[in-house]
Amino acid sequence: MLGEEHPDLAYSLNNLALLYKWQKRYSEAEPLFQQVLLLIKRVLGEEHPHFATSLNNLAGLYLLQGRYSEAKPLFQQALLIFERTLGENHISTLNSKKLESLLAEI
Image (cartoon, rainbow, N blue to C red):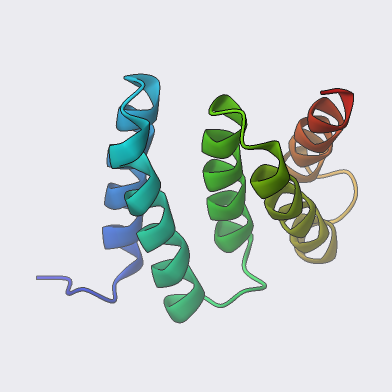
């Protein structure tokens, strides 16, 4: 048994949240994405790339819902973490830049 503080729990919750997002069950996805964010923050820390990915996932949900002012700071924070931890040319950093620029166009 892995326990409530194991990263694999966060990954499973994240996958369920993604499923809900794809099914447009946004009100069910949001608390799961928030729970994943808090769990990753506790277990891996705020400077871990998985934390940045979790920020992007929650921001992406907000973007789909038209909640741009809530999405923007999460995308920006994720981009900074990716740049610091993975570098400017890593695929996660580049994808995060695309998301942020997409939001800027809206």
